Image (cartoon, rainbow, N blue to C red):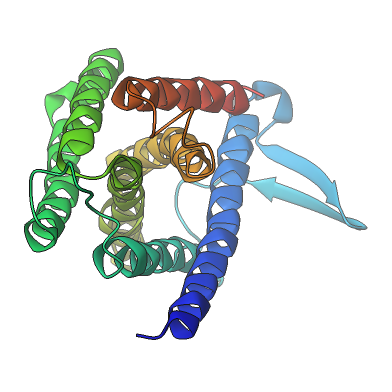
Length: 263
């Protein structure tokens, strides 16, 4: 592949990734804010808003009115993940940046390890938050963070320091998009199918979808911090304590998400 083609692909994938992420994250936080306002008893079940010359009234329903068109928000997540994976493959798999002279494995085994870590991380996360532990949020958070710290340490031992940060970002981004496509959307479809069949939709599905969406609002800020860290090698991935710094960045991201969610 010529350098010019590679650079154009880099530009296209990067622009798509950033712009799609803006759409996805913006919608996620908007609906999080909206749900919080609708839960406020002072709002009387409705939220009045003004934006760009228009006035809007929004109310929340526990079951859809099938006589009206439902507007789904899903392709932004898919576009963000696909473009991010394409960029990761282009630069780190095909470009060879996944490893350096200190890496314990050659490139191809490292690629297999990278893919395996992404798949294993989603499986562990999903099993953890589908278990009875999901009812004990604090315990789930502590265990999840401990596992993430272990992942940060392992990635800095398997891959180049720069790739290690992006590998953790790829893991977290995959968890986010899998939440949307494998847990949130299927749950919503089941609720719609129940209404069509004349049954009452299972509100447990709604609660689980809401919980996974909440997780995404906490995951996304560390992912953005990881993306930005690429421009600050001395302070982040190039530091001798890079895995500790990455672990702290994740906590900082979670703290920022907590502040944003309470506004």
